[in-house]
Amino acid sequence: MALREHITATIYFGDQNGYVAECEEISVVSQANGLDEIVQNLREAVALHLEGEDSAEFDLVKKPSFLITLQLV
Image (cartoon, rainbow, N blue to C red):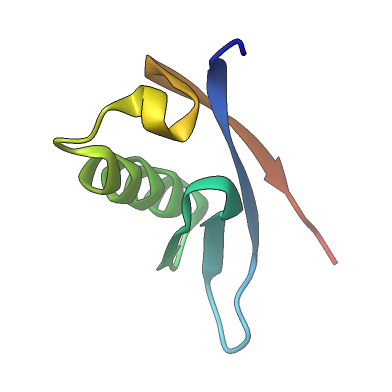
């Protein structure tokens, strides 16, 4: 099986305010007030989640990129 080259994330408006970013495939969720901040928080959360782990266990290449979808309502 080929390893995935990117992590899929969805950014959407939070229930009260700001934004929520979610990577369902590796169970990472983050939140922030602005779009730049949410992307940075997402990168940090994913890095921490994968720190010390073998990325192949998540079916990912060593340094995956992000494929981000922004949901607007």
